[in-house]
Image 1 (cartoon, rainbow, N blue to C red):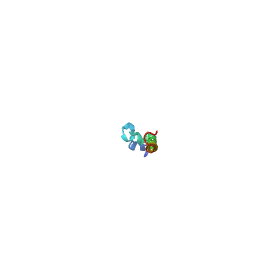
Image 2 (image 1 turned 45 degrees about the horizontal axis):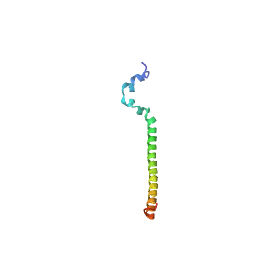
Image 3 (image 1 turned 90 degrees about the vertical axis):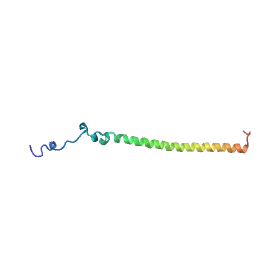
Image 4 (image 1 turned 180 degrees about the vertical axis):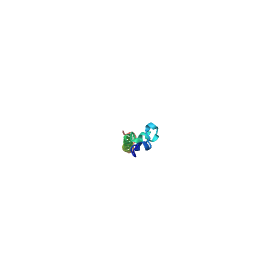
Amino acid sequence: MRIGARMADRLPRQRTAEHGDPLTQASFLNGDSMPKTIIPVIATLWVILAVIGAWSTIAFAIAVLAAVVLGTYLLASAVTGPGNR
């Protein structure tokens, strides 16, 4: 046998998923699913937070409008008295 001719035979074999190595079986370590799923998850969470923030602004605007309408009605009722509708 020549020196260096079969160096690959003398090196330890690399473990693969077929050999049952849990590190190579984890798909996110191989880059199979993590980069493909983490970006949509982050985008979805960002959109959900934006919707919640927008809804709180819209709800506040509705509450302010209702308070102004109710306040105007109550003030008008107090000024005109009961029976003048």
